[in-house]
Image 1 (cartoon, helix red, strand yellow):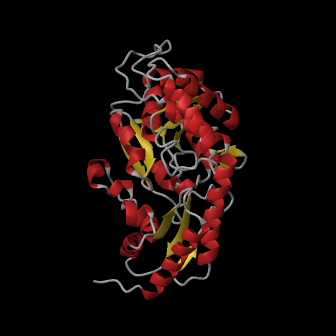
Image 2 (cartoon, helix red, strand yellow):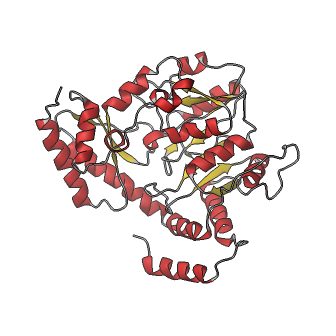
Image 3 (cartoon, helix red, strand yellow):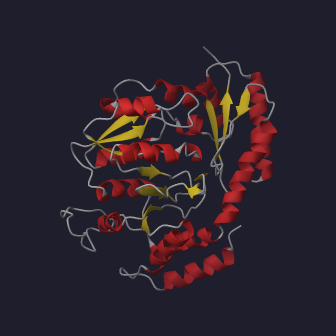
Length: 364
């Protein structure tokens, strides 16, 4: 658990120095600690995961007339930054099991207008990132990882969000590393890091040579939030182990339950961001909504997750339907986990799911 008394004292000392519009000691320290821990040259703290993605695309120079390859198996927050920079998202389907992109579809949708590929590690699963990076290198494309749900996940010996052109993260409540609201970018590229620092703060410091001046954003991370993030980063191993233990406990409690088949991320060190199971019941989306109403929070039932290419507000960008993504979401029960879920609550989730799946009789 967080050392609450110490954090409270640290926050009180910080608040006593405010207002100070030039203060950035906590943000600077957080960036240094993130870079050291994750083995990258640069970490740039911003106000949200969405801001991180937007800033990354701007740093890469992506804008009107460009296209970005994005999975259909994702949330709208992964797609919105592409639209915000004036580019066009091109939706790519996933494999039938949802663990990776469909490379046949990915390659078929490659055009001269494509300027980047943006993989999304939904539910913390990374897919075969080395393969995707090789594919991108072959086609001269930067890779921007949406690792907002993948803090602590690895592919091989690389943490998610490292090893690609830019990795983007969220620190919203519920993420493994959280501070209420916030995000950060990771990169080994000096130019992209400098451009990101410029864009997050209304153009100050000035952009590196070669970047055209542009109206930037206020995507700065507040000092009190950076202090909270630092406190949680110091206990990140504990937070990660707890999330993995929670997912494993729910998996064990539901193993053998009729109609519920727990799934993992074989071949990867997965952070267990959400408990995942394949459900085989009639009208699975309605079942997930039913569980949410009974206090089992989940991606479909609570947040109404659908493939990005099927969201009404993104209809103008959708071409051929991504059928695998739709099928994966419809049959996946992704239970939302947080630090507050003790073993008793997780056992309650398991009891409710087991009871309701046996009794499930959907209305026509």
